[in-house]
Amino acid sequence: MHLVFMGVSGSGKTTVAERVSRALDLPFAEADVFHPRANIDKMAAGVPLTDEDRWPWLRELAGWIADHEALGESTVMACSALKRSYRDLLREGAPGVRFLHMHGPEEVIWERLAVRPDHFMPPGLLRSQLETLQPLDPDEPGREFDVRLDVDTLTREALAYVESAGQPS
Image (cartoon, rainbow, N blue to C red; front, side, top):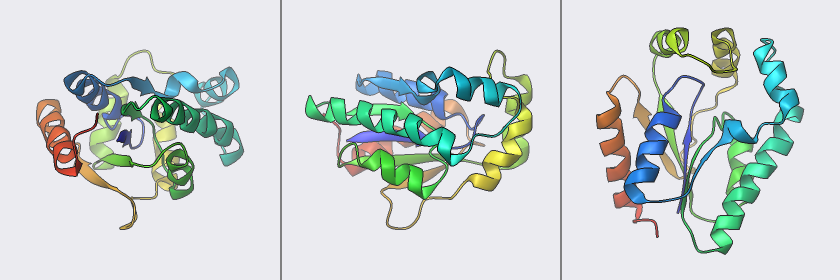
């Protein structure tokens, strides 16, 4: 099983994904680390990424999933995965990719972004991410999580979801 914690910047996907990764002792990837310098510079300048900017990055992430699948390892990843087409590409890396959508009111996420230190993406890009975001379709394996809950509760809920979906190996 490959768990992708998805959502807009500031939704808490990395925080919860890291906790789940530690709890299950699974390899973890923060998708932001895979961005090429040009993407980081563009976002830091307040310019939203285009699909053309994202495709090479998403292919690399799908490759990371596929590499671990080939080793028989489950994984945990934090990745915005804002569009269905992006999630479809990530699913090409392996069967069993599940999306845990960290979702909540814009005001809550905005407040988090306003106090988040040392991240290359400025809060001003939140609106473009929200406009790009396509919620999980009914045929996509995954679940939505309410980010108004505290991190401990979100972690417990995510772990319960993983257990109900079949414990990763």
